Image (spheres, rainbow over the protein chains, first blue to last red):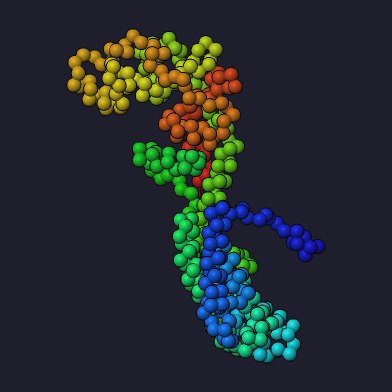
Length: 179
Length: 222
């Protein structure tokens, strides 16, 4: 019965954030994604097979600009999480692309495990790994280049925006640690 | 101000005045302590060791304040209070303060209502005879320069001529926090405690607050 009792939860949600926090989160999120999206929609040529924008960046933006003190949002986690998860995702797609459900599940689960083991846990990493499997075709055709473009490069752009924007207000600083 | 800050300030003053040589200190949690503690918890904790250390010391101060709400003035006060009345001659009051070794006392009326408070400061202030002096040494310096007896201006006066009024008092149900805040704010060393009708029931000195709080805030070492 302990098993079900545990599901009841023990504590309460932490306090909400101030209006200032909400505002700066919005500003950072807007600028970070704007730069990544601009690099995709404007910088890359029309016929390019490359992509600069993937769904997991939306998740990274939440952490980078909305939860700046979280260990999950720190540079090591951001970069390590995306790059490692991308490599893992591409690998499992290559191995199991004819069993998509298996490739998907192995990809995400292994990404979590490897991120834990390397202290680079970053929730959007799970998305990066999954996207490597479910694709689009453009993403599939990148192969391991996916880990650099968009995963690594997009994350780097967002990191630079985070360093510049998050340190402007007096109540904020970023990062908490590099290593 | 938080009771915690009041106590720290008082202990620093007491150390400076050599009243205590080893002030107790709150437990000093380091980032390493937090890191080691985190290792002992299974599962991922979404907070950095440094943030947790800061959070811990803030929470600790809140806990102290919470405890400070439960202790009331009546729990801490001294009930035997030396008092005088408005028409008590000052030479008698000075004698009482000297003999009883107290630095101040409340002035009460026939119904034990607190009318004013006299402290050493009131004497110092009035001894200058028209020239308000602020410290004992100013009095000494002045008296060494002047001719004649300094205390003459107040020689035949009574309590109500020099007492501070209205007096700063607290009700017996006030929290320790409120008393400490009041002392810090008004820069006074003692507060008479009254019942709901303003009658004197006790008195609290700064040292009473420090003594009561110390065992709660700073657990004894060893």
